[in-house]
Length: 175
Image (spheres, rainbow, N blue to C red):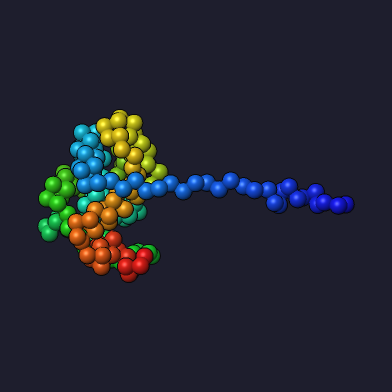
């Protein structure tokens, strides 16, 4: 045998999937997104998006947020220490705290689906896709883009990188 019959199997070039670039939203685009989210669903979808844009929180931090982490008296949210992030207390706007007060606080988690189920990243993605299908806001974005946009806009407004690192829950500025 001059060639291995497995040559085509082992050395076959596979096309790599392309990495998607982040969609960094400007402050004006974020304002437009929030306005569209409020129009789409003022008490359900809007508070979720608003929390992402105000805190730069990770997806898991928001969908797993419990009522004991929300300090409505001091307008703060407490994100506990996680495997890859530090604990931190972040301020919330009066508007967001007001909207959270209107939610049903009988459940342990702050954000629940219409079926009173806990959100998962897939359920939040479906809700986000449903919002995008309305074409109320046509700029491409994902929930992860909101965190990255928060960071970029914070720095563009002369924010300190060490403070940003703390806000995002990073262990150091190199993460």
